[in-house]
Length: 92
Image 1: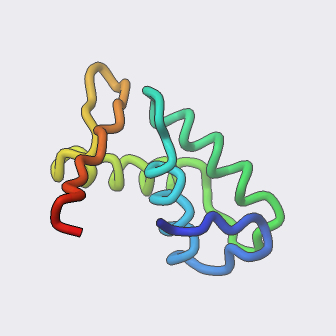
Image 2 (image 1 turned 45 degrees about the horizontal axis):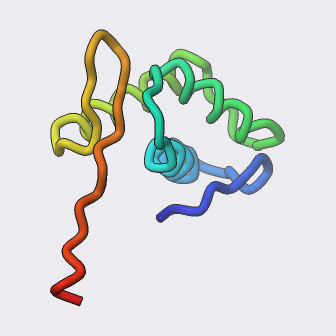
């Protein structure tokens, strides 16, 4: 799982992408995209990279769309529900 780097450690677009996906993967309860936006903005305080709120929201929505397509989240009326990871320990 990606490590969430705070503030000044977020130096480029890939760091922002990693922050977004790590934040999404850590969600255990239902959430709205706006909730994720607020969390990511808090982590970005002190970062030298400045991203407009609308662009950051777009990055979050793009990631949520992808996670929905690969069945890692469900979405109903804008409310996202993380899907449980099924592990097969018999193959370990």
